[in-house]
Image (cartoon, rainbow, N blue to C red; front, side, top):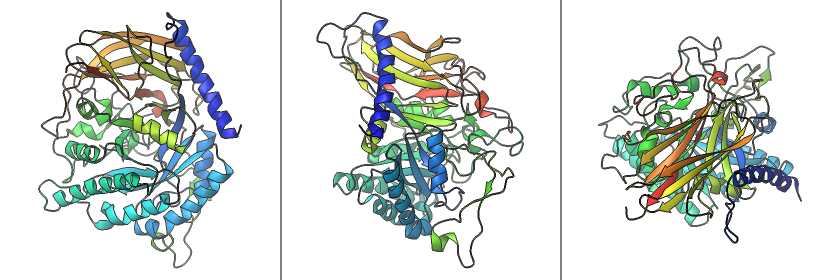
Length: 531
């Protein structure tokens, strides 16, 4: 057995033990019934930058070593698009990636691109390893990147806006075609920091999803730059995630001013119960969330960018000079990959395609500050001892049928990188009605979504299972989970009747991320027969 298989076997064993705890606490399945599948969760980060991005600092090796130190199983180097990257950097980095894959098969390293979406913000684009993975990215970059084409205008009423938005849709459809024809085995797209500038409008996000839902699978639920507001590190106006912007001419006018802030470190689109993410889920279609480091410059780091040789620049090299250690703290807002933000993907085997399949299926939960060691979620009909469904899945039931949500939590067993042993204080169940596609594609509200149950789990340690009874009504619905360390709460953005104890903003310049940590899960959909 090779080291990669052994690592997966150990992870699978831990999750199997959690599942065994779930079964032992209640009646066992009848003879011959199928047990729920055991998933291992691989931890990753799809948004990491190196010297192959014009505004970053670290070498490829520094980032990969940091990811290994903090326990990541997979990571995506998604360097910023520009001509230097397309002409030189992508090929140079690809050689480093191939070497790293050969030397350390336990670390799954994807090559990606941070795409400047025409008329909008950024996306992570990454492909499965294969003979055309780097070529796919450079072809895509030159043909569809908004910055390279000058297709950045998204101002309402601008004559170029419709063209630019249409080009973004064509880009996603082109990626889908490369997968369909087998040019690459797989490719995925995730929107990055969607509300940072307010230029990712609801209709654009729906258009990207609808163009190829198997390719455009979701968005960052929480941005990187989580260290931006550590007291004394930057300035008195700093906000976690560097969400310090105001509406511009290109911003979607329907977003309120508070949309440009983070709540418990999470993007307003995700953190608002009944908000933009829920409005998309209420259409009955999966749209996943992630969290990641967006690492450019790490807080409390002492490295600075190296100096250029005469005649060299990023445009003619595609690579920054190696950084130099100054022994003096340098400016920074980020954490190392895996140090603070983690995306957990449920897989049934170890490998690149398994991670991509898990992301596409929505078997995803996130945490900050290493809040949890494990989370396993199952939804089952009470009359059925069978498999049930997990995150991202769909359960078909009859009207009025009773179902139970089984939430198996494994609490943190060791101190996080800050030296804190995290403690989970509560688990919230959020439920929303599924009503189908909205006529108003710029709607960002789901008025029938709210917190329906909150479980106080303060003081509970180890692995335990919460059993939460639910009843199917006359319409289909979804449920998703959220929880925190309990340090900072307040009425949710849409009111206490919807979310009585939700994440809140922090004072500018006073946002210690380690003192306000949350986990979120993807939804499970419940399809009511006859609806």
